[in-house]
Length: 313
Image 1 (tube, helix red, strand yellow):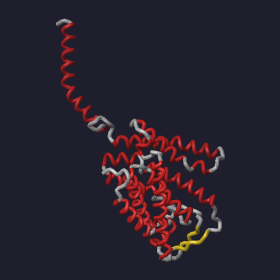
Image 2 (cartoon, helix red, strand yellow; image 1 turned 30 degrees about the vertical axis):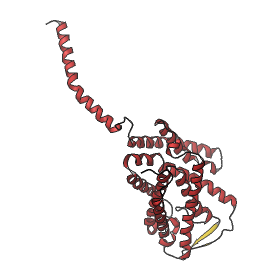
Image 3 (cartoon, one colour; image 1 turned 90 degrees about the vertical axis):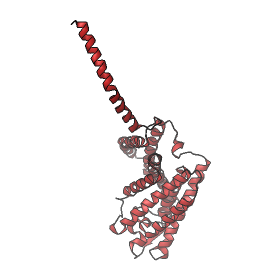
Image 4 (cartoon, one colour; image 1 turned 90 degrees about the horizontal axis):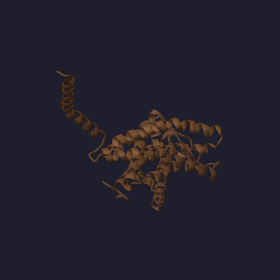
């Protein structure tokens, strides 16, 4: 047997083995592709959620040095307020660009309609908190009086802080991840999952005592469902941002209640009276009151019945 015959035989054997392995290899590759991509060849929503979370965690390594640098330069603390939102927005922008979309696709379509829905949302959030406060006062849970230290500057400063909070939390909890979950798993799974995450994010807030913890968590989860519905009925982040801002600003800057456990000086001063904490909300604030749960349920019901401006099934 010559060397050429041996070489030819080995080549034939290798080619046969390759042909035998090819179907299995192609099947494995097809399974992997189906795991990551949908039938149209696009990355699945779950993969996009993982990409967002990886980028968001990675951004923390940049956020902290930037935050410390701003502090070392002796800038006013107000400059730090929008930083979390800016980083969340940058991560969102990176993800939508990878999907060859624009920021408007996640609800940042900055037009006249967007501004109008922000205003409507501020009205809804403010009205809801005023209703809660009125019920607490009517049942003897608190007493409101003008704060001697009140000022328009304080109202404006609080508006800046609460606007930054609303922008950050709505971008994070009702933005890219929530929307990918709605598209991939359905509305109910997305709403319940993000409501639980939203409640867990507030679990360690100051004033979270055993007597108010259950009501505070229920109300926080209901608030997340309310804000999720606000997005789903409009397909825009304008309405949830407005509601979130109006709720917090009215609660703290206007009425002087603690906001999610954080003390806040307001135009009014809220003195908590000797009533059960399920009435007053205790140190956590009105959000841990049963009245907050009732008002949230009513608002959720109204949003549920509303057909919305750009609602989709």
